[in-house]
Length: 440
Ligand SMILES: [Zn+2]
Image (cartoon, rainbow, N blue to C red; front, side, top):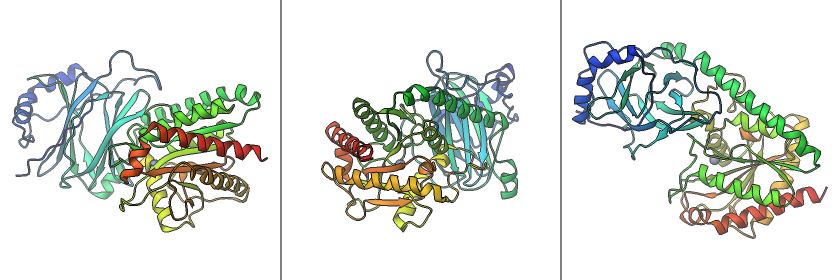
């Protein structure tokens, strides 16, 4: 018997109808106590959770302590893959499928994740891999990559009993490709929530711009890569790309502000920001320069050094194309619906007007590498590369993406984790920014 589990988590709406599901509790809790997947399913049919009420206000700070996700399990069964998520409090939870690539998204209000280090999926059953974290302020989610098309059964919620918190049971049944595709997509109300959130972000950005521009200062937008549910690459020392990018971004912002620049950031905390929203922030602020901060990884752990990417329309070398694929994955990782027109992974076309922007970007990349080579290792072969990177596509904003080093290399990962290195690199980047605008 395959007795394999994963622990992970989520939330649900508690209503009288949900409480009526208690009849099925004993069987599940007994099986869970035994550390067994619930192979023998409750005889009573699961009761669907009623549609959730209005969710939290977009971007609002949650009131009081966050609900805690205490555990999550994946049980493999002959006919289904079952997720059981345990929470401290009842919360609104939505599970839905997305196609291309096939994923199941479990969307919920912001929660605090207190999962231990769960075993990875075995590769059997429907679940290939999964991740969890903040999607945006006030909103968390878990995203599951699928091995096969599934149908997501109605969520069953079990109220606290036998030492467990609220348990949410989600069953994934293998299904056919046409049936999966027909059902896949964000629920309409969540789609509206996302577009409202993006509009709100654009509105806030627009309100901030006029006084900054009036001061006649150059505007720099810093874009720490990844965030929230999207960790990016993880270093051999455990350093996560999203944390490094944010720390370096905040440091660089301080240095640039001290030199008289107006600086905006696409994120200032550990939250996910969709790629197109990052591009929009650069454009809304009419940035004079957009700098995305990342770190790379390579199967060859001896590869080291910083590199800088500017936009190309796909005629890049194989390594650059692979990097673009990795960095453009962010929205897929976070469970963004890419079926709309703004698909960041779609082929990138550069028009003639954009060439001037690309030239300015390249000039900055060259000068930045010259300065950065004084303070850190630079990628030995061709440190300035071009690739079709979705985050660099604003036609009117000169933009670069810096891969600060290789988290897969022990020396790079160690030095990128030091304050000294981060300060030296921030100062060198700021020197290049000075040079970019001094020489005009
Ligand atoms: Zn990255």
